[in-house]
Image 1 (cartoon, rainbow, N blue to C red):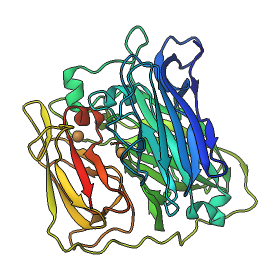
Image 2 (image 1 turned 90 degrees about the horizontal axis):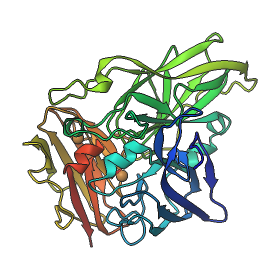
Image 3 (image 1 turned 45 degrees about the vertical axis):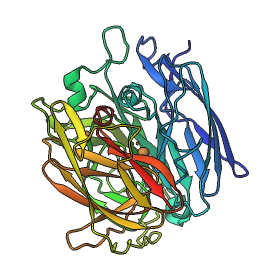
Length: 437
Ligand code: C2O
Ligand code: CU
Ligand code: CU
C-alpha cells in the first residue's frame, strides 16, 4: 500500500456529466514514515473534490474496500433521496460496488456541499476515520468579478486520534455519548498548513466542518471575515464577523482581504463549550491554531469586497401550525420526540410543495446540530420572519429552541433528519421523513 495523499485533488464535470470512481479503503497516511492509518477515498484524505454545475449528472461508482458496510450521502444537495441517488438506506457490503446516479437540477444554487458515509451505526466511526470530500456546485456567486478573481482555498476541518499502533482510535461508550473528538486537527488533511495570501488581494475560503463531533469557532487574527455564503449558497449581502461558529456538517464561505502589514497571521479555533455529560469537551478548553496565513507578494487588481450578492428570497409564513421536535438524551439513549431511530418506521409525513415551520427544542445538557436531508431551510426569528440564508444544519444550544422553515420541493420519497454529532445520530438521534404527494 502506498501512503495516503493528503490535500485536495479535483474532479471536474464535463459536458454535463461527472464520472467518478471512489474506493473507500484504509491507507497509511500522515507524515513520511508514519504508520498511522486513515480511511480514505482512493487513498486521499480528504477525498477528491467533485466540481459540478447545476444541471450536471453525477455518476459515481463506490467500491467498498473497508471491512464493514458503507454507503454515501450527498450532504446539502437538493437531489432525489430515493433509488440510486441520495439514498441513505442503501448499503454496500465489503467488497461490493454501489452505483450512484445523482441528477443536480438545472436551478440548483451554487455552493459548497459534501459527501460522506451514512450507514446508521457506523457513520461516526467512518467519518471520524477520514471518509469525506467536498462537492462544489459552481453558480452565480462564482461569476461575480470580485469573487471570480479571488484566490480560492478550501478549509476542510477534521480531527483524528490514533491508538498506539497508529490505527484510528475507536470511541469508548463515554466518548460516544459526548461525541468523539480527536487530538490531531487537520485542515485539508494537513496539520497547521500555510495559506499564501496577497497584500490587497482577496482570498475566498470554503470552510467545511467534516469532523464527527468537534465544533470550531473560527477567527482569523486581525482579519475580519466577510461571510458570503452559508450551507446552501450565497447570502444576499456580505456579513462581516470577527468569529464564526461552524458546527459539524456546516459550511461557510468567507473572504479575507489582505489588509494588514505583511507577516504571518493565525487561523484559530476559539473555545466553545457545547456542553457535556460530565466530561470536558475537547473544543471547550482552549484556543487551537488550525492554520496560518502568510503574506506573499501583492495584488495589483485590488478588488473590493463586493457589497451585493445573489438575492435570497425569504420563505413566506406557513399556514399550518409548527411541528415540534424534542431532542433529548435519556438513559444512555439519544432520541427525537421520545423515540430512537428505526429505519422501518416513518416518523414525519409531509406533503410535496408545502411549507412548514419546525420548532426544535433541546431538552438535553449538550448542544445538538440538527440537520435535514434533501431540502435546505431558513432560520425563523422570534417575530416569525425567515432569515435570507439557506442552511441545512442549525446548532440548537442546550436548553434552548430554534425554529426553521422548510419547503418540500421537487422530490418525493423517504429520507432523514438527525443530529450531526454523528455519534448521536448512530445512538438514535435520527428520524425518518416521508415526503408524499
Ligand atoms: Cu451530513 Cu445525514 O448528513
Ligand atoms: Cu446530510
Ligand atoms: Cu447531538
